[in-house]
Length: 290
Image 1 (cartoon, one colour):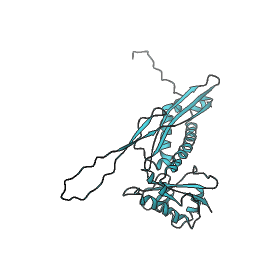
Image 2 (spheres, one colour):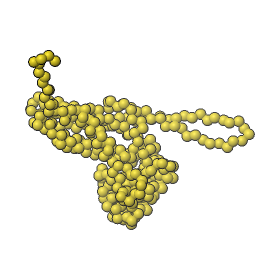
Image 3 (cartoon, rainbow, N blue to C red):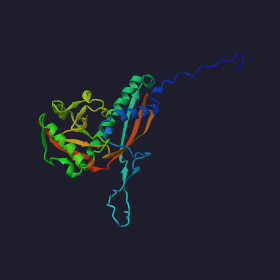
């Protein structure tokens, strides 16, 4: 720089708090941490999802048989792995208008509030979608069949033991695999009165899933308000993370200037899909509250 020259510092960007990339990263982090059912699925086959209708190929290994060695020659069985497609067929968006952009966008607290509301809206539809996988539970793992079981503080433990037993009898629970059960707040109120329930603060040195309130019958207990009543009946869903595979992508978040007002338009596109790959790794019962 020669003598007499001066430099100017660029003005601070008042809109930096709402850069789409920052929105996308923060919202993804919120969804990863807080969504109830994301604690109960696997994402082993999550590929590069860009558009609705994308498919993720899932390969299931074939069973291997064991034979007794005799005097005969060893024979080799031909393994035939099966494949299925996880289709990204759920397409959700949010879109809203922000007035007085320069003032609002410089306020990171406002940005965080909008992100939390977007996260909550996505979680509700995503949790309901994942919980609907109860329709794929193996028929042998439905406690009580289609008849509703009446739960209260004295019967809840014995019925939850039956759920856990279904998973064990299906060989879904092996070493290192810990099952989960998802309930709603009404059932939680009975569970908290059960002497067999182990609260999260008393679960020794073991690590619970994010958001789990404790453990019963060897299952981590999570609570979702999306297990709503249908004709006074609720589903209780249990399983292991091997049962359902899930893939999602916050495809994009955009900020556009509204040509008809002094406002910014913010919109986001979220794509996802799920597949029950092991129906025997799920169990459920239909219940009513006493």
